[in-house]
Image (tube, rainbow, N blue to C red; front, side):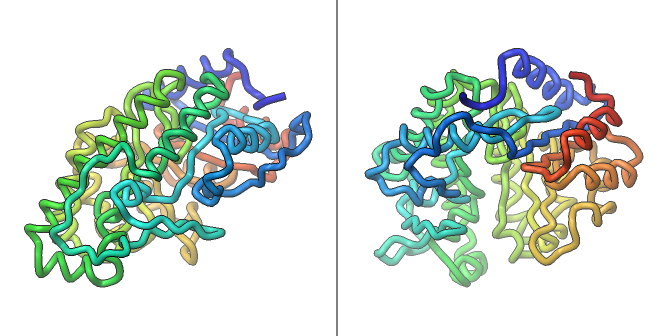
Length: 360
């Protein structure tokens, strides 16, 4: 049967997304899915794994894609939602492209230093023959071939720059390096930056021709180059080090994208929010409070700061979370809710969309 979508809906989704990016949409973007549709065919033999890296290399990309198609066919898409497939090899897979060991686990992927001891003077280069890069490219190519644009094929999670370095210098090593070898780390940061962009461009060449636009691991659609930038390592450093080691590379990446977003993950990164918002080219911030922290509706001061800086806001939650945030901000413009596999009924979803003047 395939995913429950059509070309007419894609036209509307694209047009609405561009109005949101341009600040012309007077309502929030609302991406809501329910997992209650009959896929219309037997369940494939290939199991479902959250991480594509968990599949043995003997399992073909086409078999993986058949399982993805089955899972997508269970979903119904409401509001501005659209079908997307994300080749998830773990956050920061560029580390594996550059020689780190990738070890998939049930709920995460670990990136570990190579068997050889890595010094702070290691070098990074684009390697099109890297085993993990070739696997990501093969799966992405198979996805494009399978859906021919009806499903948005997302860019894999390339990771943040210092996050990639920390895979080679884990634990306290990279933190000490910032003090002991600052110039080496800056040099290495820009080498990683060059390699990151080489991999981005190579994978974009595969997925962009058939896609409706650009999408990262977060299903935000953009007709212009978009990515969800990040630096989770910044949780462990203060503002001065962020300004010295993180912000210059982050700002340079923002300049290379038309619609750059930042993944702000956890209260430990809030100390860097002013620095992040000061980057003129940055278009928006995704706020993730993180496990053990109050939910998304409990951070009005964060949303107001982002709004006051003229940036867009994206959050994960359910329908009532958006209502609360909109009340806190005083208006719904420039906000995007992603409510994946909601438990709200179809009637509740329809009422919710009507409240925000969503037109089918």
